Image (tube, rainbow, N blue to C red):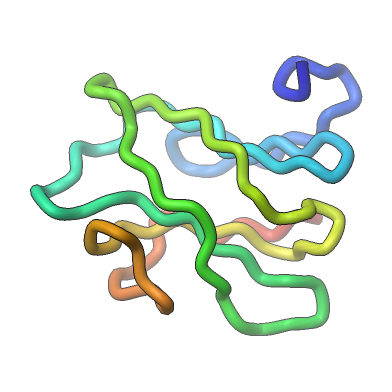
Length: 105
């Protein structure tokens, strides 16, 4: 219901969008490039008032490159969402250039 809510805020990103509805935040992505063996996509966030990327959820898209991912963080506390490719299991800091960095404003 959050993804189709008429009052949801939508932020375009390459290959999809970030959707904010209330305190919940989602990545809805399509046509993501296939990952090399041993790699995953990892979401990152920056809290309001911070300048540091914090690690969030890791995921692999479907074979067609699609993914709908609910971020565990409270959207009301976030200023930025980013995505990068990381080693399986994720990283404490990005090890590759982010696919996107999206301010939530």
